[in-house]
Amino acid sequence: MCGIVGAVAQRNVVPVLLEGLSRLEYRGYDSAGLVVVRDGKLERVRSIGRVAELTEKSKNTRGLIGIAHTRWATHGAPSERNAHPHISKNHIAVVHNGIIENYEALRTRLTAAGYEFTSDTDTEVIGHLIHSHYARGNSLLSATQAALKELVGAYAIGVIAADNPDQIICARRGSPLLLGVSDSEYFIASDVSALLPVTRRVVYLEEGDVAEVGRGGYRIFDATGKRAERAVQTSELSEESVQLGEYKHYMQKEIHEQPQALADTLESVCNSQTLVPGIFGAEAAATFACIDSVLILACGTSYHAGLVARYWLEEIAGIRCNVEVASEYRYRTSVPNPKSLVVVVSQSGETADTQAALSHAKKLGHDHTLAICNVPESALVRLCKLRMLTRAGPEIGVASTKAFTTQLAALFLLTLVLAKQRGRLTAQQEQQHLHELRHLPGATQKVLELEPHIARLAKQFAGKQHALFLGRGLHYPIALEGALKLKEISYIHAEAYPAGELKHGPLALVDKDMPVISVAPNDALLEKLKSNLQEVRARGGELYVFADANTHIREADGIHIMQMPEHAGYLSPILHTIPLQLLAYYVALQKGTDVDKPRNLAKSVTVE
Ligand code: M6R
Image 1 (cartoon, helix red, strand yellow):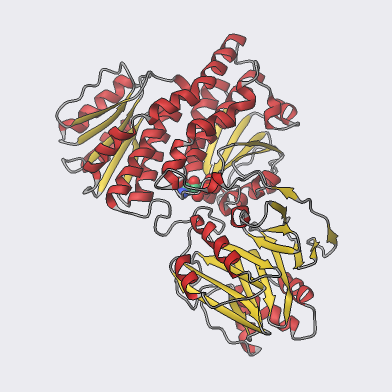
Image 2 (cartoon, protein in one colour):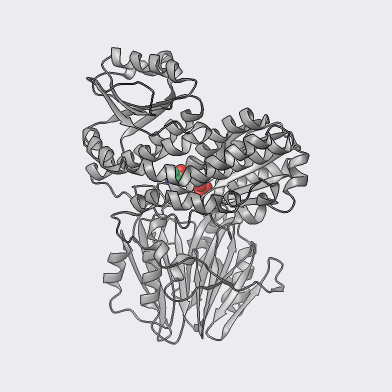
């Protein structure tokens, strides 16, 4: 989604702003812009499309202070006039991530006060509001603080003024923002990856913080306006981890990083002889002892991880588990159970719906909260009592891959720890699971060897309009995830069903033009699944079956088999995910789509 970069230095900051924006491209955007102070005036450049176009248009722009933005349209279509920065009375410039909910009322009031609106965005009210306070003689900091008090909604903002070439004011509530610290150069950004070429030393702003950033340093004020100290941290993100290297796309790179990501996520457990609740935080043992159920809240791919976990938690740990789409849960009337463990699952830790669902759960009296998340400094991690960090490393491709399989690994650990605590895991079973987890990265590597085969197969999908994914039990959510991957990046309409549901409706769609992709593990439901596949074949449907060894499903006319390794038991969903990711990737390549930045989508969905 939208991205922010800002800089104040003793040199021309335009290259820093542009490089920062290009590093935020992965978040998804449709226009970009920047503004600098030059000779006491604001100089703004905006463009529709890619940062490369903005770079071309900014060739002659220079300034020692500036703010920049990539915009993912919410209020108002993608257009130059809606692109940020927005400027009030040629004097105050603002970039903004988030949504201002009361913008209509503010717009009416500011229009009546003589402010002219030149865009359809909610953001423009922020600049005018700040200007209205600034014009009354307040400092830029006080004017911004006063304006923020009038806003309802979520924001991360950067503000500069034409007559103040030394200061950026920034603030956050509901959207992430951080400061970058270097020798006599200071930066702001919505994501640390934007600042890696200039600094690794960062300060994460907390909810409600406002900061004044100048060449000589910075001051932070908390939500009540009091001076606040926030630790300077050194980001562990390396340049290498955000570079493409030998790969054509980030998605391909991230698919291939899964063995390492899983090994890193499981490291502390696999190096130990026993499972302990402490991997979820110091208070985990006490919390787990008093819960009687689990409620998982998440969106998209992370929701699919939760769906797999429900099978594990109920079967292995014997604990009741509900899984809800966060955007539904936050608005429905549910029956709270304070003894439930609320687990939020998220790659980014900033997804607006998941954050809102968590605060809704807390308001309903849910006190036991656990975040399974890939970003240590994220809002969800800070807002939960317990946490387990997946160690997938930065995920740049919009289509989530390594984040998903590492979420599954973390949720499996949660299952085992709860099973042990509830007396449902013998010492022998514990050792067996640990043994299988240690082999998981290697098994994942083996599945990646299917890549050339899948690349060939993908050619058959290029002309298709629709596809059906089937799975049963633990692998039904994997079919859902396979369908999501395919539609997200290849724009082929894909649906997933539990295979037993076919004859209750979707079978009507099956004909020779409908590819049916089936996840076929060698588990207790295999024979049932084989009957479902016969139902498809009998209607002329073309079958693509990802079959474990010894399933005895044979290649035949209209039946294509991708041979998976031996059945991996409870961990099988992790292995079966990988060929479906590869299939989506190679079909997208065939179709020539923008794999890492599919149309209309954003990496972190920080607005509702
Ligand atoms: O960062 P999160 O895991 O909370 O994001 C949730 C979804 O927006 C995300 O999984 C989305 O569905 C992905 N693009 C799927 O590939």
